Image (cartoon, rainbow, N blue to C red; front, side, top):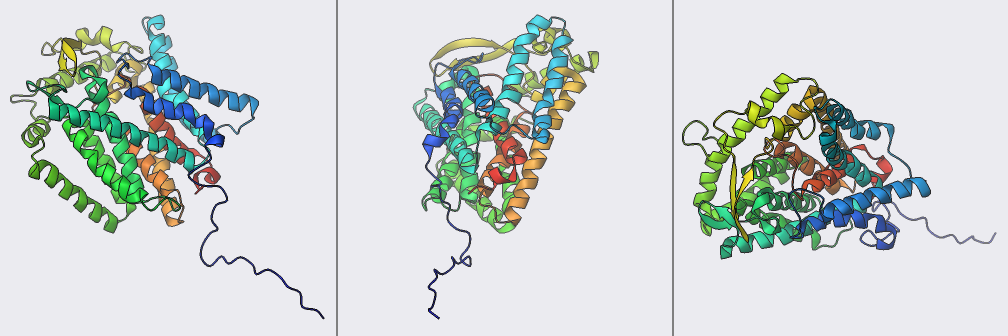
Length: 452
């Protein structure tokens, strides 16, 4: 009998087969991501205003429209029931706070803004991301934005062209100006965490240079983050880094902490980059009773006012956009009329204090216990789901662990930072993108998350 020649079966001993699709290409099929990338990058435009409605908001609206178009005409798979429940839960508080407000018409702009940032943009991100490659593209855009703003901020510190701080124009604010001093610090923190996630666990098929470059960028971005003198962002970033390091394993965590410690000693101790001012700024957080920082005193006074508003209307709050109108009736006499801003190309200006600079207290005062429970329930479900899926991905050798690390880091950062900040300014829409990235990792189907 003639021998039958057969081709040898492909061996699986070496591991899974290489993907048939180039992992770093395919832009033609990824054009729906362009509005999301634009949403991330456009806040860097100097034309952005602290009142919102800038180019990034237009891009986010376009992303939502693209998402709706794909659902209607291409019959794309909608959200799962769990994802729809988690992402749609905050709508209950938003709607109730609007209809029960003293002036529902005045509350409508707040309803639109809250729906945009906490519902529509996160849903659009979840639906437009096809796989882990899409996640990495959006996360990479955060890194690009952080680098641009970070370089601008360091230049402002070195040349004395930044925002006014302790009588000197040295505060790094990037292109956001002194009226939005948290803007640069926020985007730099986002980029730092995205780069750190890639440095801790790079994608399998990534170029060899990607991981060391990501590590260098993460360390370098600590410089503009420090020069922003934003205490809340420092605390949130440190918390997010520690959480992610704890989830990567003891050995890698200790190595990373040693590297970060050495970098801090070199930057602050060796080169003396704002060491005295940084130490004073960090210590001012606890100086509330004796020679307190004016900004700290004002912040605690507004927190007290927010609590008083909630006690007056505990269920539904005073209504969206109601905090400014009720502030003076509930604030202590020690609250100043506003904060002084100057520098970075802007003349001296008195900026009114129109929010408590604490997202949770803002929601509690304006939406009551119902709104806060709905919003916290949604965010807690996203964070818990993200951590759970990250642990599963690590145990199963999932190739998208870098996405999980970034999602957990960003969601942790947002949750902690909201203790010291609330929505407002051109970077507000980025909060929706971050929530969407975390929700995609936590709530999307396993076939989409596990893609290489």
